Length: 544
Image 1 (cartoon, rainbow, N blue to C red):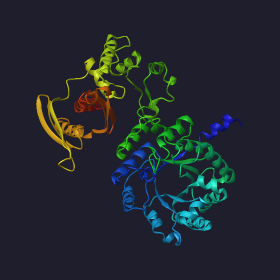
Image 2 (spheres, rainbow, N blue to C red):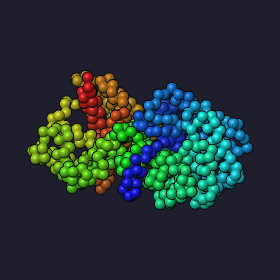
Image 3 (cartoon, helix red, strand yellow):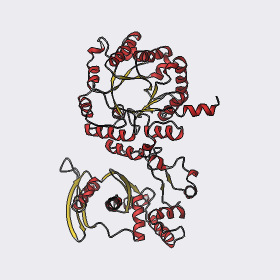
Image 4 (cartoon, helix red, strand yellow):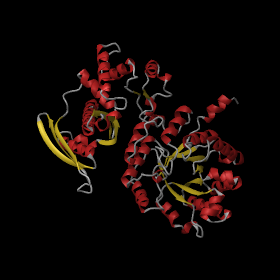
């Protein structure tokens, strides 16, 4: 058989994905979910088509037990929820182990059990004999199988175990297989294994135990930055089950990021792992989960990051416009992301024309408007404005210059911001007062906040909610300040970037001034204007 023919056979193997955001992911620093958050994440993962969702450890916390009870009323269409636990405690039977009893009460068809594969851990952490540890593995799995559960066995520290004692590491997974586990997952728990080592070890495992070929899995951590590469290498070596967290967060440096692993497998290697029709929702659903987790997806994260398909240099952008393959490895729509042409001093006429054409198709590269807009951009850049990372402000600039933006949604007639330190109140150190006008009607509001921008944002929202209740959906997610000319010391102009989001969109706006509050005011107004424009546009475009 030729290597090409063999590759075609291998590449059609279905890869089973298990997401452990709700179990391993919550061990990441700063990650915490309410029960409602967890249910929302389960729904998002199900919408994406993830095969298995490791939802938590019901034997560990009351919260997880309550969560599993609530999950029984949640209808899922694509995913199977799994409960997680450990092998039985030493000195008691599996039937006497209360944590295993809680696993059964969770009533999930599939359970994930972790056990020790490393003789070092068996002796120094678990503090039992090597043979007793094998009994823990065997008796736990047979007990759960006898109660009708499908068991996935996570061989903890497997690759470190293999390097220290190959024979014992192999015996641990053979024991799990003989006990009835349907998946044997090799865990790089410390995240210290390199792809070439990992691949060689898996190849040897399959030589020693070829009967495991259809049930091996991989669980990689990212302590050496290898989690994604190790997951891919494991699949190419023969694993058919991959574990990770969608956005890569988890203990220490995190887990394999499934939002990167999945498109790599599906688009690069032709391994089916989720329904192809759902892959185009990857970016949207990843951002939804990031919002629930209260984190920002790194802009440079492959596939789903904000900069994954951004182009700045004129030569690159020109190449993209002629043929996207010239500087993009896939089409962004395949995973639901968007192409961005960054506007800066190195942008060419073609980039700016393309951005304008997306708003007004009647404009061509040689239209007088393009020359006028370029002059306007250069003038603003000379004052410190920069639109490279502020797409929303740039779109508003085009619409205003082109006459495509109706009268402002509101006018900020006056505002006042004050701060006091130490604060008189424990919860706020800043206060803001605003007076706005909408369609000739004035509204005054005040708010307090943790800082002047927070207070100003709160006051603006409060004043505008009477007219635009949809602003309740908008939140600020990031705030950056940069001094433009440090030689002017405290009198220097500053540039403020504000990133905002709603459940269906995110955008960034910019403001510039010698006064940091006034720069923030400009960016805030653009943010609200863009949000209101987007909501209005979305409503108009909705089918009747």
